Length: 308
Image (tube, rainbow, N blue to C red; front, side):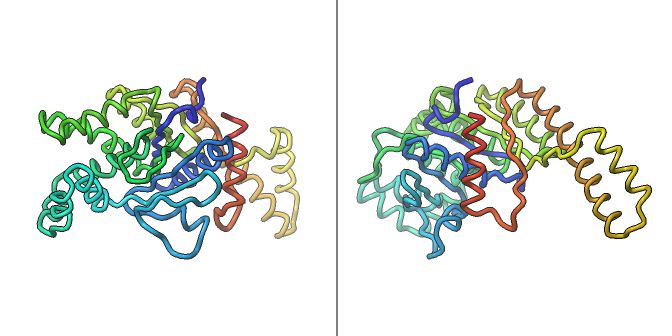
């Protein structure tokens, strides 16, 4: 199976709360480790990645190098619109971009924020960039919105192209849509925790992408508990729980049995998902830490490196 790192553009999506942003950063670390000039693009003015690497305040809409070969940008739709107008319409575009009335009208147009955001993502992935002084990247990773909104984001360029039919918006929308549909150029990675609702949502995502002829390259099952005990050991733990009178020992035994039950349930959900996505699945362990910082992200990148 070809590695997703062979693509130039990767969208990472998944149900809210499954660790999508963590996985996107870990993939970025792995790509940079392999010598790829990589940028992780965060949408909706998020700045999670900057918070991991630096604590001196965020800078929106600037391409910042956080580690050798690893960059980030926090994309703001309004700034993306201003940049687009400057490039496409010069002085007139700059005047429009500074008009509050025009900005309010544009931002109120349904889907315009998504189109502007994904337009900037598309620009980042080009070998010949329109941004003055912008160097090309080998890989652009998009920390995309949660599953439902993420699918809508991928559909937005084609929707605008079909509605506009002619003109610059139609042309740009069709160009971006063709890029997203090109499975040699673009990939989609879904992140799920091994629980029923995230797994169901990931299965729905796979169906939605297939209907739109969009690629689903990989599913990453995140936060998988370790299987610490063999079946015979579980029987021994149960017997010990029935015999012991110590409150402390009983508490420890119950915790061990509870963790085993949770790990077993997780693996049932993982197996459901594994069968649905034809084996395109990678597992990441649960990180037992107060917070996910750079050392933990490096460890997750190690796991991904072995799997990919």
